[in-house]
Length: 269
Image (cartoon, rainbow, N blue to C red; front, side):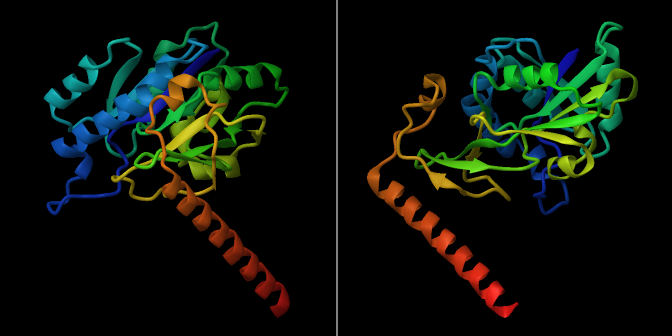
């Protein structure tokens, strides 16, 4: 069995500069993402209790060499490898890499996605591999670690949330016929593969910051962070009372609005 963790650094980014080039090729964007990556993502991968995985960071092949070198130099633990690919249609390069690195003893391939501004709990990799060992499902199938936290990096407030087919999805396949988790956008994976949904404990963190294009703060605000691993809670600023009260107020407003919508729909029926 080989387990690959894939992180897209500056590919598939939606925003473009006026000349049509992806903003992710811009040095300012790259350096900002570099800061997010090494603050929120990198330390949580380094701290994994199970080290039996290969971390591949996907970088747009048009990126300036000096920027790629900077990304490499900051990897003091030498925990990831860089794979240069095109902005889109890079699946074949990913498959070639897996085929080249996996040996005849590797009957199964596990591939997992992790965004380069998010984080994972220390047991993240271990839980995925334990679910694989215990499963009697026929490959291919998915593993979705449903529970996690959405964190406002400005206020430091954690919000508890569950997602189906989230950005931390894993695909388990036979080596003889694999596509990898990169074959589809994460929100479509559970629609195309039988999926194990793990709900025992939160295992990931989705960070909301000033450069987010799509994601936003959702979920139930968390008052106490004492149950969080120290290496994770130490990354974030201590929250103040007022932002926490405002978060709870927004949370209950959304709940009330959804309840009213459901009642109105039933009345119309």
